[in-house]
Length: 545
Image (cartoon, rainbow, N blue to C red; front, side, top):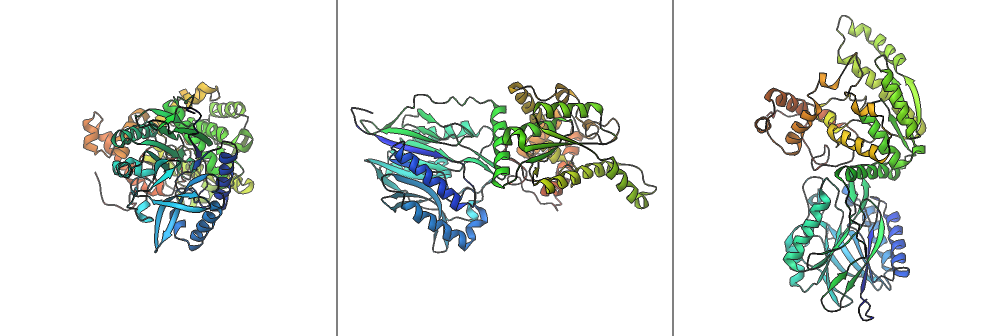
């Protein structure tokens, strides 16, 4: 404080909310308001984008009962807006239109309402399907400081900040549901600094935290003063209520928080924490009592087990080793070592009896035909049936173990290793799986070294290696990144130094396996071109490159 003057205390509620749970979200908002008011003596508390409904509510927005519950929740929140201002996000229904809205509640009523002006309609965003854009700024008096409010994408466009500054605003409060992807954290800070330079505003940036289906919201709320200094940064991937002090003595500015977390997470740590949060929230918000994982002794299932244990606790995770005639002793030993290190219950079930029965049943049809990948897929499907049976019996969710590289080229079995409810590695390349496994082992040595060092194999036939069917992963992943995430043509990729025949083979595999990916379990989004929400291609297509 300066000369005893009481400046503005702004509480940032970086919360993990649940889509559709309007009653539960409202209760959490009220609890946060009481804490900010009674314990922190805050003047205003700020909540994330679409606080009441969670983000993204998608077609729930069209349900009349949903609309009614939002209105009831707003009335309830107005009753709490006494002695403290509340800035809350919600959908607003007016004249058969829906707006993505932020409202200021004060003195028991809605004092000001702002409609989001820029509606993202790219990648995972589909807001133009649901919302109408607003057109006007909203500037109100916050203890003598002209303050504007805006929503998420608005801060990525300079016009909204310039509009607010022209209306006399000194402070911008921007509420967000900004999903994580690799390097997004640095990008947000760059954007805020650019807006500050253009507009001269002080900016408070509040972000949602938590997992919602494929999306992970990473928090990392910030405050940046009008000179471009970062005065506050909230922890990543964690809930919390953080109080900032905004000085109105002399030139308006934030009083720096004594210790700003460096947030010096490595590339691997940020991704690992994002996946852990995504797994935890998918399991918990969908009320599963835990998770089931098929443990093969390979790198993918090993990393999946680590992620599950770190997300849910070892007591809520079970692993199943389903050996076949092709499973090596090393695979069994390494699976047991990993399960012991993570204190996870490991079941041993043989797939030989069902595999033998299936092949005998199919003999009349298969007679005279050579053994091929069909028999390999039957083994994978025996395992899928066993895992789903355990899931049905225990209620626990099956986590699939396939990675993005395999999903891209179809090196996976539909209704076999693809069977399950959630896919933690779905957006992680095989190369990244190895990097995260090494990072996890640096925290505590749990993954046996042999799992990381041995050549990858599905162990569905004698002496099988992934490289029998695929290019080496260090080559494959570079080609996939260029084709899938950078939209390069085979000619472009070849000019970058890759073998043309190899490139064409990979591209053909990617294109013809869209039908498999369309039937895959949802998984955590890490890149900007994840299968599912980001990359949407027709299954039936005559287009070829």
